[in-house]
Image (cartoon, rainbow, N blue to C red; front, side, top):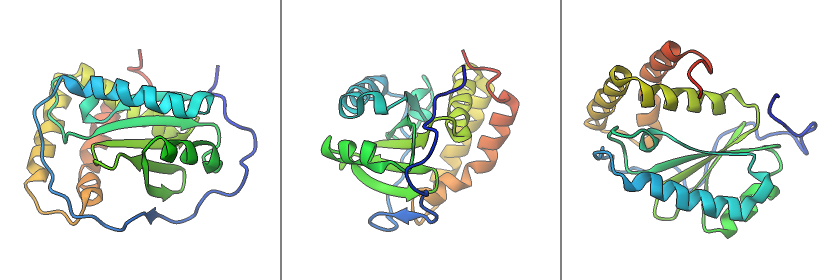
Length: 191
């Protein structure tokens, strides 16, 4: 059954990228895998579910902290899908009321985070291929030791460089992510 999406967006989506608060220079650190990361995810997933109810169509732990044994920046990444990305009043207001802060508004994607900067919640529309890409990549890293090692080595090398912000660091990983995702194939490794 295909994912359910709202038939008609309430309004046109944003057309530009808004980074609330502007570019932030942050120290980037890669930490050894921490068994508390899934616990933190579950706590935030409960908080998000309580805030959004059925508006949250899908809730997943993504990113490096979702991969057992993988060193990572100690930031929990969470994927939430909603029926209509343009209906911000359905998800942004409740997430802000639950203590999250809006950081990014861009076409097809919103990002809220904790004030402590240790959790990033990525909001995408149900059916957006980027949501499936996150999951395919995560699942490949969970299953393939070689690709997990390649990704960790890449991150460790990149974190040694000086980046103007985390977005530049993330952009620098694009090629290796595409390479790994290409080996995974779309949805072929989904459980």
